[in-house]
Length: 324
Image (cartoon, rainbow, N blue to C red; front, side, top):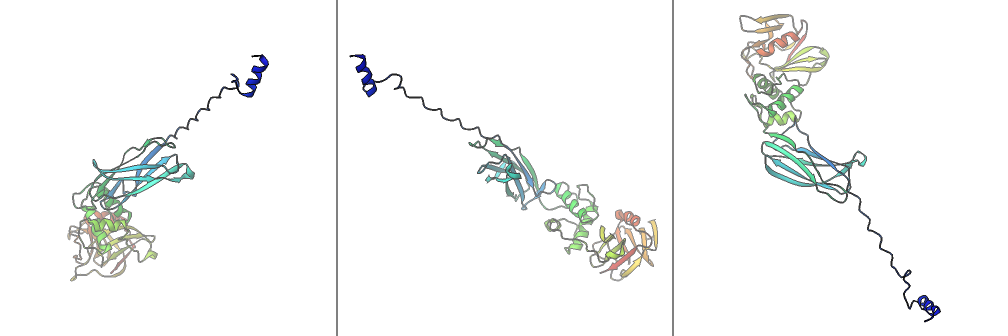
């Protein structure tokens, strides 16, 4: 065939043209971006000094960085080695969308150590992340003489915050028992020395606040016969609250507004310790026996360990109100 004929056939597509007939290779599939590196933490909120009470919830808070929409994490809750709850949590953006937060209310009916662990398995948008374990000690809301540990520390802290005079030792001793008694009196509960769930719940709810009646009297004492408590007031605010025992029905404490006119340190022949007299033979003083009810010969008895602190606080001329 002549060259002219071959060229014509190629042009007409009858014969393949080697160069022009090659198919271009397909474009490579784009590599998806690597998932974002994630960090995640879990912590307990609404606890009391790192502890919580049985049947009272606290909050588990999981934080993920960065925040990626629709990402989740699994929170596992253990009491000891027993898994008691598993929950899938969805994050909500916080801090301008730089982090995600998810929360869950946690409650344990039994005492023990609660462990919180959260995990996120890798997705196209976010890499695998796991938290360190966060622990909460769950205790019964009960304490009595000889008790020690988180419940007692919480009890003492709450009493002290309300100005009840109480040791901060973490041990339920005589001073703690007297503070519980004083709080029970003000709160209107039965007069016992035990901190039951009613006491803990009341303290957490803010009950048992001593209400000042005479804020204009500056530095003064307010003794409530009906409550059998004694409070030291300064500038209209409560500084200290004590368990007291006033005069028995046969020898009642005189009521009214008085002033401290004499102070006798030490122990006298009647067993009165560090006495501050406010009218005639009526005094605020320490005594070996301070029952939950009115039992004195007319004075305001306070526990001996508290007597010196009250004596030192009082000054000659300070007002003493006896009411109720």
